[in-house]
Length: 360
Ligand code: MRU
Image 1: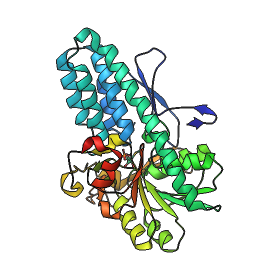
Image 2: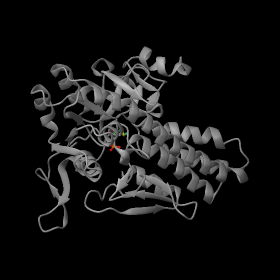
Image 3: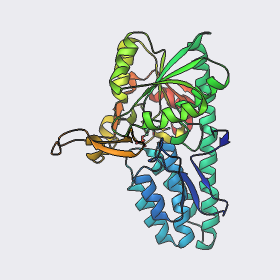
């Protein structure tokens, strides 16, 4: 996607042909900083500290992290150590395990002297496929938006950031929105701020603004009210892991939006590339590991102060304890359907298998 007319991806190979460039997402929207990753450890840190985040993007970053590790030492032990280090960074998004496993299967039986070139080729394939999947999701979701618009403004609510910054390009939930906008549909997005890390306020609002898509930032607690008053035509969110039965793990607060959408009769769609489907599990509440992050993400908030400086301030008494589950699980029964790279389907095992019969 373009930033001020210049096309960018969220991750790319440097001109040197081996190091990896990322946008430091912890600095947005205050400053746009591009970082260069040169080691496996730097890649693992970038994922763990959320310089890169979003399920598809952390998969691609892990693949490139393995490339960097193997470049330093193409031995089998490095492949195993790198996979273990990267796997431990973030537990909920299954794209991480999916990408690492794909790299391991491709590389482990190759002689070490052929591993580095093969690793870079596989990481590039993962990145390119992500872009193609998201573009296809965009086309599938565009139909929904055009239908909902029926010639007038369509209001879409989204949670967290499932835009191009969360993927290699296009985004998942935001891909249909960008395509609708580009096709001249009058689309307006309600952006949940998404406490505690504010990915909506910091990233989604920034992305949409850069692309010229009309949007309004709302406090997380406002979504139910807006849906009840008929101000939302459609909810579209992304996912970090979808079970084969259609349960959806996504950013904390997604479940509450799905409950409100069901009560208000608002369609609730989940945009999901197949790399986010975990075919090994059915019951999301029982089986999806939920990342617990630092309490400081809840007790503190960072923003730009009126004097222009970036400030981190405490929101509660110093001694207040805080809990920070980073994701929740929305049961399939609350999901209207999935938008995948192979089209749309019901949020059920049968629905998913109708598009992905190879997983029967
Ligand atoms: O903690 P984050 O910012 O990595 O969480 C991101 C989300 O929950 C996104 O909605 C999800 O990864 C889908 S991204 C296309």
